[in-house]
Length: 600
Ligand code: GTP
Ligand code: SPV
Ligand code: MN
Image (tube, rainbow, N blue to C red; front, side, top):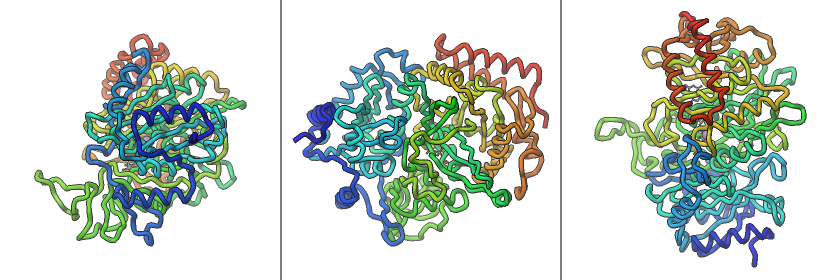
């Protein structure tokens, strides 16, 4: 009997099963009963471990393979007919080669296994803002994660009807060897194939693969934006809520900012924070000429280490139940531990993320501490468990965006906050972003790399066209959000962070909103408007004036080097790069000539 009423879907499932040869095919219906059944099965094989159900109800534990702990950008490809359409920002293969190479690894890879069929919706089911996907996978871990991260099951199938469009997502664990791992996108076929991995961003195909790489490709054709951005609302006691969207590269603070708790010194102001999303924003110009955003996900796939009740109390609250912990320390009583959590590590009997006996203070041969949790260990938790979750999560056209914020991890150079002069300058600001590499990607940690709009690993087409698309989107809006850049990570001469970050970042968001309303003047510099230091509310926060000055210092020589690096980056795109960006580049150089840097 046919699995669904959707003929094209049935046909595709059949074809994929022909290739992968699973013993069985099971449709995921989204029911609690089926979820329990799958959980039991995964626990019986050791794929998952049930955590202490009294202390952590509904929580599960998982370890990935040791070679499979972060996204593998070097094994991620965009397969377009023309190489130039993927651009210098992507690894490219022809679609034929992509299907052939991955096909060889998929061949017979599900023998003795079950193929699960997960119909899922990114965005509220049935909303015109949303996109549907179907993921085929042989991993129960993936199924259980997708049930938290997306709206999945029978209701999506019903919304698809007999012929609705969907992204074809195929995932197989195969052997999880690096030379047999490929994460491949076929934007022209609305198809994703991922094989040989079991790690989050590589295998939860609704997330980076669909909601960013494929969606960014579709968004350009359909005139909207698919971005690596958090969305949060700030409500004042008057009831006015303003929403901000912010793009920071992986592991640079999106989840933390999205769940911000006002610092004590600002609490008299009575703000309330609403978390709409922590990783991805889909944004459209609506009939009112404003930009509106939805979060297409419904869960968090967040960085664990450093999460505690001081840095992020809302995250701590969100992960107390119904959460999947991946690659953290497993305590003998079935609870979990990680570096930078609230509790002391247990002295005996714990296992580290690799499954080895682990004790605090253990060192490797070189005398370096052995971390118990992997630096990119993750929690998967339902968004609705976050105390600040927005009441507009299921609203079909989301929330109106007042400001767009770009940011990265820069020990030097970038000031705490600065504002673009206008939309075009803001696009230049986003296009020239750079950040130090973190544990969320393979590669040399700490190295500065250019990461435009935090989308370098996620833009599913030539980034020159993406910049053009951003410029065109600005023209379409009657009310353009104001654009800002922030850097929470600037360091002093001793390598200490100058800014305390986390909840204190609200002080900067306040300035941003005041600028959007035209309530406060900025200081014009070559790179944009910066605040007068006295315009930042520092009540209850003791930072020496000299440090505040360092945070806003603009060093013309360092910026000259930065501009050289930007020019080098732009040149990679040849004459496909919009001329407007070169014009902005020259204008910046001119302004440095006129205004110089800032003293202090
Ligand atoms: P992805 O899920 O990979 O996209 O990451 P993310 O952008 O959501 O980053 P997340 O909020 O998980 O933060 C990553 C790391 O940055 C954590 O170790 C945080 O403790 C740290 N961090 C977050 N916000 C701040 C901040 O304002 N200041 C400082 N110094 N560190 C921060
Ligand atoms: C990121 O790396 O930006 C993440 C984690 O959000 S993953 O889903 O693995 O891409
Ligand atoms: Mn992310």
